[in-house]
Image (cartoon, rainbow, N blue to C red; front, side, top):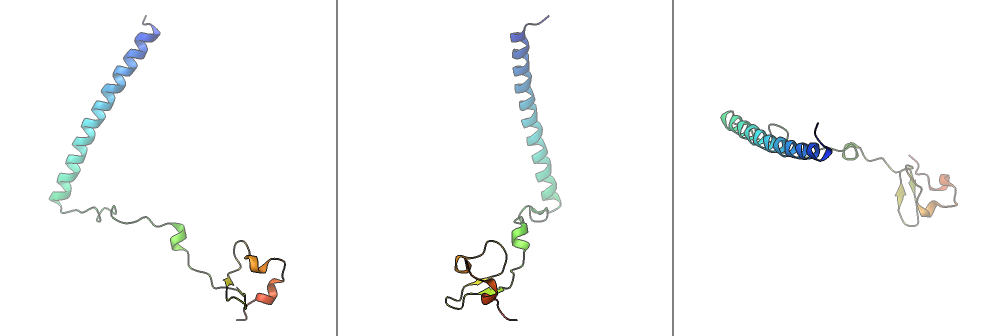
Length: 98
């Protein structure tokens, strides 16, 4: 029966071997992919790798303002935290008439 230290040494040795095997297989896979890309004239853009990811925020459309401060011209859509110029006042006095 092996001791704890011997088993830990075996684990460390196997982890190093596994990492080396992974690196070798990874470089072989990359070389294979690159050769197929050259063979079929495939670009990174064809694979969708050159495109910037879209976020939900970038897909949102702007909301028309519903309230306006007539003194400064500032507007608010009615979404999110109300602006400071509305604090303690009735929202309806700032309502934009459609």
